[in-house]
Amino acid sequence: MKQISFINGSPRGNNSFSFTLLKQLETITKGEKYFINTNFKGKYDDEVFKKLANSDDIIIAFPLYYYCIPGILLNLLEQYYKYNINKKGNSANVYVIVNCGFPEPQINDEAINVIRNFSSKVGFNFRFAISIGSGGFIDATKNIPVFNKNMKNINNALERIKNDIYDQCKKQFCDDIMLEPSSPRWLVLFFSGRSWYPLGKKNGLSKKDLYRRPYVEERY
Image (cartoon, rainbow, N blue to C red; front, side):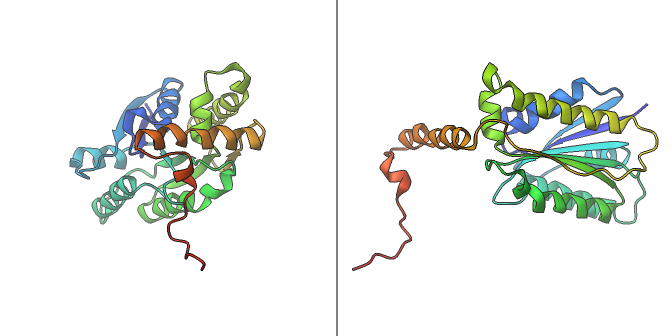
């Protein structure tokens, strides 16, 4: 029986788009499943690392943070690396699901490379990543019919992971899957930008305040 571990690397935990996608993938896979939510305390029992070491497949989902992976996820990976030294585990197949706020999914490349490098260091087999542009926009509009194509493309990509998990050969190299929002760029940027206004108002800022550049040297 397959042992599959799902790692949610989002600081937002169960309220994140990463969690939504992992739960969706969890429902279409079969086997013994183990779910790991990263935490700010950075404390994990050895049982967590034993589960990872004995996994056949590991799916890691996270949002892009400052052009890289969230610190709480990096902390978990570093702890596993130290745990893994001089220990033998399964050569688990690793899959990544990463989303960013930019429409261009290529911005996620460096973050994906971090997981790729980690996998090689601990003896895991990195398979491929699903790189999603405008993840926040897609999450916010996933229940609006006119934007259905965005989630349909993601669902098809999740099926690719599922099919690869149960492919006994896994000899063929797989390219990362790059998903741009199917909606017009101007519309994506418009909706993405508007989400900042109510957040600013909640924190006592006007729309004009959001465009301030306090660190630009004043000209006299």
